[in-house]
Image 1: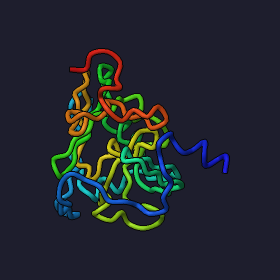
Image 2: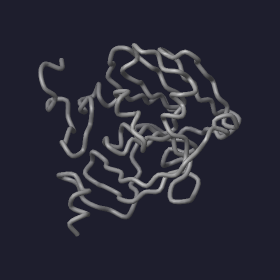
Image 3: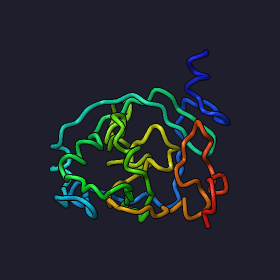
Image 4: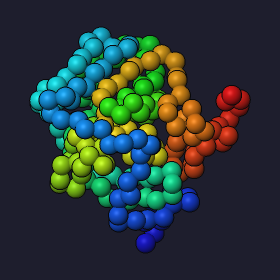
Length: 196
């Protein structure tokens, strides 16, 4: 029980279900229409097909998942491609400090590059041994375990490496710019200094 308390951020309730939350309709992304574009401050911009992306080295990781709407789902097993693997393939330029993650539905969210380089950050196509369902972001979603789930963008279509930060979809609408669960960084008014 103590372990569960340590792993559950303040204000969160544990669930074994996986609630479905997103702002738009579920986009229809097929293997034929899938493209993963990486651009901005990189040495080798890319435009990978599904087959090319799936050919990258993959791994499994078990992590917890925390939603800003106050639920947490522990011990999720993900399989996919490490963010670090993508970063190595494209070659990040020294000036890059932030990444805008883009989705097929038009969604976008900003994440500091330093957070994405953690070993447990990946682009997942599988959850608990099954192909990721479209309602949960399939065929591919980003998983950033140490941040609230809105940063783990569904239906990922690409990455934009940037020198300066730019607020994402929910960040422009009042969510915290970083979103760290154990610090309860839910809303922009909690950010230090003037964020207007």
